[in-house]
Length: 330
Image (cartoon, rainbow, N blue to C red; front, side):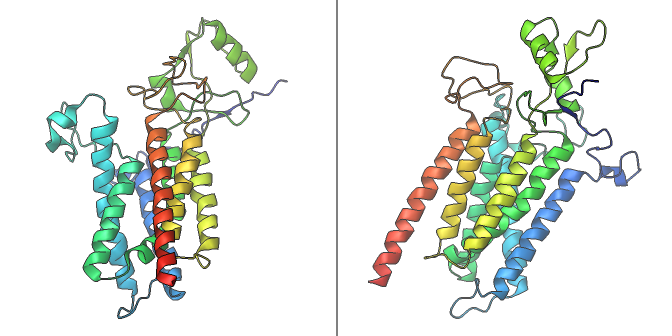
């Protein structure tokens, strides 16, 4: 019997940790993953504290300092992520016209509580960076030394963030015929494909999918791009920075390397990740508007443009810090 060359999204996974349980039903995996992420960052920073990475002349760092540092970064990160998401990724321009709705947690039509749905990594990156700088200046500690330490911890926590996206069944990738392609239920409501199209029929046959008699639309397998990000931007980047933490040649090296490394990895993962339907490609080499597939490496998304800026910024920062360190040594 022919086995299908794709995976169905596990039916037992729900966005809620305790689905259909009164009161506890409001606890969602995505929110819980944030708790795991921040706890992981604290554990990593605590280990770096033991290694002396956060000590500076005239300041003896404590665990309370670490907690305060992370808490400040989190607040600025969430603010930045929300502002960036609403002002950059929302094509309706609603939040430009009514900025007071950026942090309004209720649906403007039904008035139901929705929380702050929509966060942007790049906005969180900018906000978190500002928060760390503000905290360091207030406590009169070396900015780059602390940013280095935090950048080692961030990927470890980031793993849980992308895992939360997977458990929510969101931010899925483009369609694929790879055997690890996954059929995400949430994609069905937003982008199913007509079975009358020849390319869809060929795609279905290649995946080994079975269509029901009279089926008009089909939900095709997609790249589980959340897991790609969790592995590469989380685990792999963390291991690289963790290994190099004791071998940096100047303060700020790890921060610049994280910025470059994340930018490079995310840039290429964007070729597998599906961009927002209302934004599509910011640059389209062949005029394609079909975001469910990428027919050219020159089709560039919003995320890739922001990642290119991260890579450029990280390279400039590393060069400047390197030259300054050479001057100091002379």
